[in-house]
Length: 501
Image 1 (cartoon, one colour):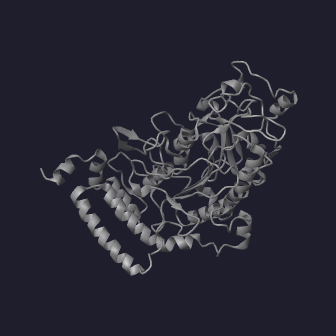
Image 2 (cartoon, one colour):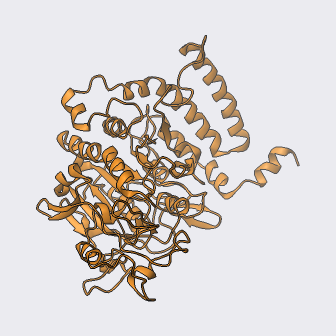
């Protein structure tokens, strides 16, 4: 048996699908060659033609606050906790079964003999017609609550950052699964053949500097073709690595090199039928076209001054959250399907009064400006914007509670996100938590994790994002390791219809 025959016998199921005219590789290549992606046909993997129904949103932006912003200090107002503190319960040692003690889930507070209540030191006020409570740390966000659906009843099983952030972004706590953006690229493709379907930015931050690491698996493709991986824009040098030609190489030289490489890759594909080979051809072609499209995208000199002013004083600083938000809007205009901005530094175990205000200052005005900018341009109706992190924060203090400082441990039991545009109902607040901010509660005040009682698992959030983009999460599948893999996993996931128009 010659090596080619032996290799073909060892082809995986995924490679077998790639050999057919409706395989993943062909679908990937079609997306790069000017089509709108694999929406036009059903692949042999089981993916039905997408969108599966008329989408409310054509594109999406995910503002991801990596490290877990503190709900008790931002959106989940708990006035009774202030009363508890005034009653001098700082050093209360809770009995077994108390709401606070039952929610201690990490080992980082295992050495504490007490769990003192740490109510937010920041003032809250109700805003808009919805009467949503928002902290003074987010004055611009407070101005747009009537544009937002605020979900205070998110929950997850993950208790540490890396598995939690991997879980919400890929649907699995273990590495190796495709990211949300990769699924969207695979299912819908790009509306601009000169830019990727999925772009990622990782701006700098001003809060706690020893932040959790970000790994490229958060925008990776897992078992999908590598063409669907998020393209990371950098703040210095070439926005994308190797975008510029090396010294002495002009565009015609690069074109000849690419043509030669493409010929070699086509010959290899004819021999082995590996869909990754076709994806590689598409990526080379995309990189060539991006030499023109990316510099035009990142040049904001044509933006009116009033627009720059709206995003705030940091907007002209490459690598800032403000600059990233403006670029996200420009990507939406140019047909990028999904943009994700990861803002680090939200892991405030200690010293919240110093670190949290800085984090909020980074993101508050630019987030507001992004939503308003889209709205002013008539794009918010079909652009979905999501803001949130991977889990919540405890109401009790981690470490020593003093008059000047406090910290909060991880808390997966409840946390807050907000969504805007793209068919999301504006001016609503969904879900309720108990007086301690420890548990999601039903209408009777009893703890619950049931969707019908208002609890929203991260699977439900991802299913809802896909739904707004016209995708049935149960039908967006790829056969891998003997299972029909999907972003929302094998457990039940729900569309959060109470927050949708």
